[in-house]
Length: 240
Image (cartoon, rainbow, N blue to C red; front, side):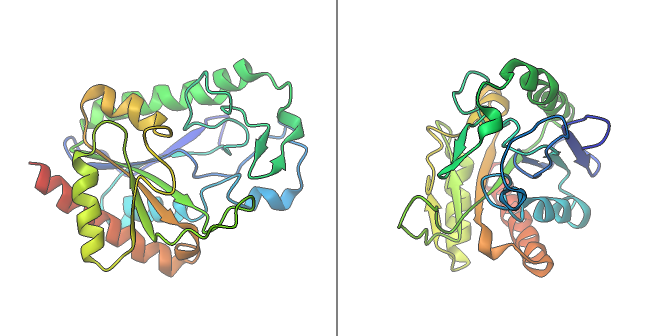
């Protein structure tokens, strides 16, 4: 995070094109936010969507899909929750207690990180008038608090508007992938950023979740950046 700004933007926006939004792209914790957890947890899925920063950056630099990326960890404030959500500042995640967040100044974190992030995103999207928004996330193959494996390689989430998701599910499936349809999470429950910035404005979007073990290396991130950019472009054409 540079100069306290909780986001960064990569690439040049062209009106009517594709854009990418990544709410959980960083594991950075400001020095004045003591979470009280072991340092190694910041490299795990509870703190960051593993691989997403690399995929999104490559989409922006190599495939002309500009990106708006978070630069603060979801453990500081979860930018992909509503302001009044009980876990917008989480006190527990996948069985791990976050003691520094117990009794935290939630309004202070909203003012410092959450609201500037979403205000900048709203302005950026207004200027871009995008043909399609790609909301990019990743998911762990298996939660520590569950015995169930997650077999999907990629998934599409949606709330009330599934128009773009339907095309993306079909296109990823045609590539031979095991595609989740509102799995492993349901967009009817977890779709805060796209509810606010896409569905509320009638904008098309694809909320894409990639399984984290598939995007850990640079080569894998490059492969998925190309694949997601291609599929998203074809979705946009299908929606015309």
